[in-house]
Image (cartoon, rainbow, N blue to C red; front, top):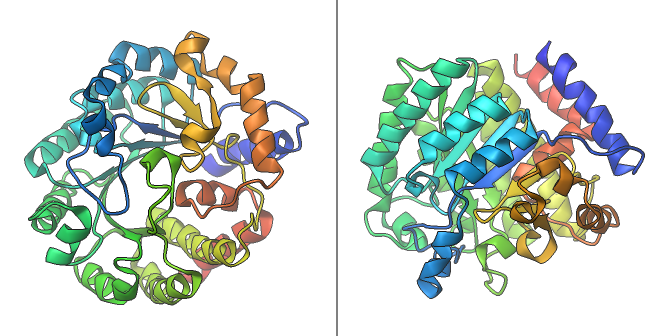
Length: 377
């Protein structure tokens, strides 16, 4: 019923917007990078170097008052992704979630974490769950510790000794929280890079034994947001195709035992694997991309991007320069120019967050998702 009342009208509007027949309206999915501060020293991402090079840059992050103005101007967003840096290092992260519940009224809130500050993350997750319960207990919260390998190999990729042990500790505590909070989903996520692509089956087998609610992975990319454009982090297509073959097999095997929300997530994931492989092989958009229409990305400094891959290189504008009025920026000439750049096929990437929206808006891909959900019953 929610799909028919809310998602279907948006799908129609977004398709018409991509044809430049109408304005795009409010995006379905908002990612907010709340801070670029991070304790990790990942081989795949150099975002942590930003404040090392320029300590004063942190003072430019949006204040809580500015965030409220932005959220109030946006209105309803169905999926709210909180990103970073390390999101839980933002001291007012709970207040940000409260404002999101009040003004954005999301159906899903997703927060990835490096799991380094275990006690703080557990405490803030519990506080966030209380906020959700007070606003709308139907909101689904996913917290996703990152797991790029097992034991010391994970620590080496992430650049922090002892990080793997902390991932395991946090994951267990998240599972314990589920006893009183069935709307909490404890996930794990892997960035498939040149440093672990040959060990994916080993990692996946380990994760399966943990009883994880959902296991996400995406290919390591060179992104403007992560300042890693010169780093050779992306596996070649043959390596990636071989690696995700095991994920596909495991996902299909485990789907029958999942609740509907998790089956749906996994079905979208299966479609994503296929699209990511095709993009890597052909180096072009293989289905229409709706970045800057269905999805928006808010930087810590008020920039609005169509996606984090284009990021700083193709900003749609800064909300501070638009009086914190999202709709004014979203319909600006600069925003339209970025959409035209994407629509004309000048970029192609397997960014997972955007790919899921593209799948939803692409008939054949959505049909595959529905078929996978039905077959899993």
